[in-house]
Length: 146
Image 1: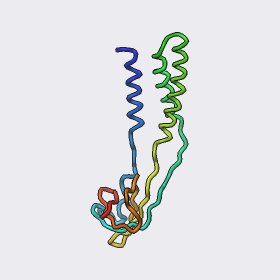
Image 2: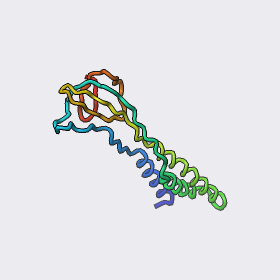
Image 3: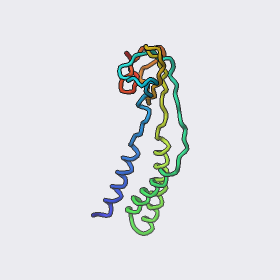
Image 4: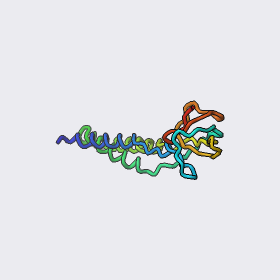
């Protein structure tokens, strides 16, 4: 195995991990009486943007710094290698920190007055062209225009 294979594999794994989504807001809460929400209809009462500005934990910077230093260490020789290792570590730390900060925990909270008289809240990461007053249907935990 070549020396460059491990750093390339680490970069690929880190890139895939950064792209992973844990979007928990694609589903809606069940009705209080336990009935299903599939195909339920209603009218949008309100749409609120909920943002979570979380600080970075530092894990992205640490992982990015390590990966950057490993990649930088593969460049050049002697003093040039040492400089490339330090530069790669710093650059990787900055990129890793920014990737961690850009994870989105923001979503829309859509309050719906259901046709059966009940109220329902749906959390979605986007609202498309939904507006207050629109008639909607709820399918698979998302609100869609009727």
